[in-house]
Image (cartoon, rainbow, N blue to C red; front, side, top):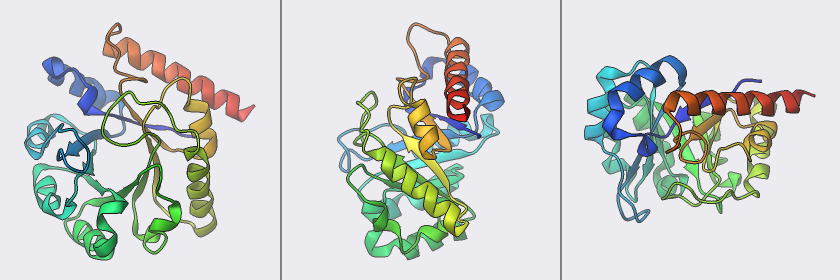
Amino acid sequence: MQCKISPSLMCMDLINIKEQLTFFNQHADFLHVDIMDGHYVKNITLSAFFIEQIKPHTSIPIDVHLMVEHPTDFIDQMANAGADYICPHAETINSHAFRTIKHIHQLNKKVGVVINPATPVEYISQYIHLLDKITVMTVDPGYAGQPFIPEMLDKIKTLSELKQENNFKFLIEVDGSCNINTYEKLLSSGAEVLIMGSSGLFKKNLSLENAWQKMTADINHAIQNIKQ
């Protein structure tokens, strides 16, 4: 069992961004960048300019999560800024999903979709075979630090079963409340990528290195419990 880690950069210490990016280059699998427009969710976080600034300083894929009402307005600028994965919410592309997926692939970028807690897997069934990554929100989108929604475990299991039965290639990612209380449940359900934010990695009372060591130990412990 493997578990990939994607630190959520909206939670990082921006005062020490260069040092933290250097650390992530050596340890993380992805860098998760949230783009919010203040409309789809009532928050505004990072931007294409931010991606442009960090791109020369990172050697791992930049994964962009588009929490925006009109993702097609953002795709080209994210690609030009250096995004490697571009992931709109399924709820925002339903009327033009195939066109949007094709466009992102034509830009030589990976395509993901994000599904909200209340959105069923069936919502993306017609184009699931075209996806490189599916992100399951285990909290309502918009803010870090929200409580875990346990009903999402069945959604992760459903995606895992569909992937195995059909030999799909998409990664199953989880966004929201990935921490010591949920690692075992998420990984045993089929999660493959964990987005790490304020509850699992970025701790005010721990250095990034110490927090990473604790996170890694907790995840390894969860994996060992699953194997037993």
